[in-house]
Amino acid sequence: MAAADVFMDSAGFLALWDAGDEHHAAAIRLQEELARKRRRFFTTEYVVDETVTLLLVHCGPFGSGIAHSNSRFTARAPYGR
Image (cartoon, rainbow, N blue to C red; front, side, top):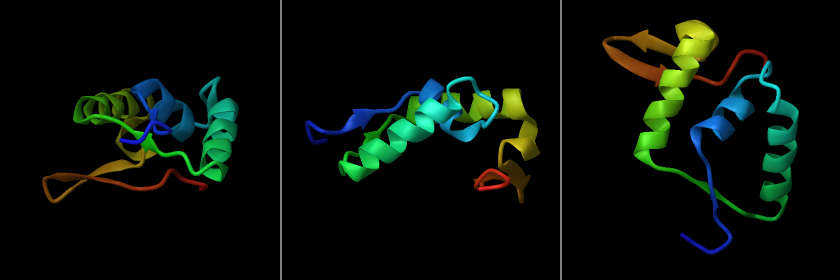
C-alpha cells in the first residue's frame, strides 16, 4: 500500500455502482479525478462482503449485477455501463 492509495468502504462502492444513489455523481467525479492522479483504491475482504450484501439488498440479484450461476456468485458490470 502506497501513501497515495485511498481506502474504499462499502458506501463508496455502492455510490459508484448505483446510479440512483444520492452520492453517485460525486463518486464518479472523485473516481475519475483519482484515476487521473494515478491513485489507487484498496479495500478489505470484509468491505467486499458487506458491499455484495448491500447490493443484493438494495438492487436485487439481477439489478445489482450479481447473479447466481452454477452455485457461485459472479459479478457483472451494471446495466447501461
